[in-house]
Image 1: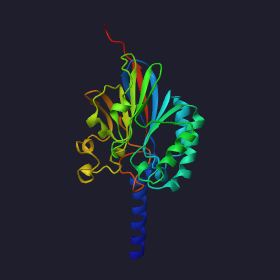
Image 2: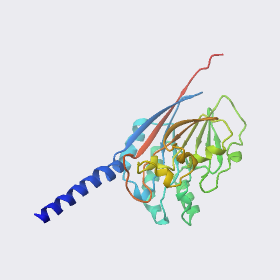
Image 3: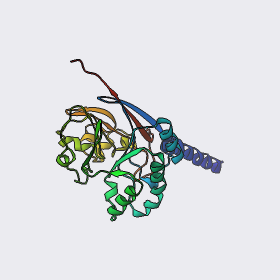
Image 4: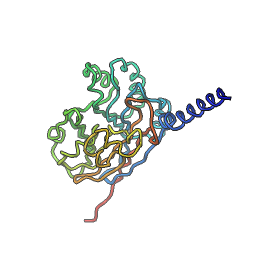
Length: 266
């Protein structure tokens, strides 16, 4: 009888582990966020792959890209978790992005700089036709795309990133990794997207009071869309996991950002 109870306990534990901690890493949530702008654009954001701990299938991501047909893909950092050994695991994802034919922009995250061969990762990303922005901007016909390097590692340079001539007729679309860069932001923007915080990943009360992940996280700003003095920003919950390959009441996410032209009354 005792053995039966032990076996039953083990089964219950494994089921609860799978349902509460593993299933959220496999069950992709597609968030759809609306923005007011000067033009009509659709941006698909993928953040925080931590590729060795990503359980969302590439086929699911491919199907989403094919269905949505975005104008741009923004990759907002943390492609690897801890090691250069993850480069080969990352290749199929980068191939998928390249084969989609969608113009893609990327920035690095803090985990991407935990490795020794950062240049190797940068070269790998560029090898697949992805525009890696390190405090740089790309001026298009109707938008300016700004890539701010990672704040957590002190690599950001806002003056350089926003060194383009201002044009009120163009939307300014910003991608970065750590949302705390907003603490120093003094330039106007239409949309800023980032990640880093995984929506807590393990959604328990006061988590960011214990784990220091920056000022915004400690203020309770760790996911979703928020307003800033100079624009609005969105923090993705990410598609992969860091440290432990689990999530608790926080599903993996890919985000569709739809910018719609709003005519102002003169």
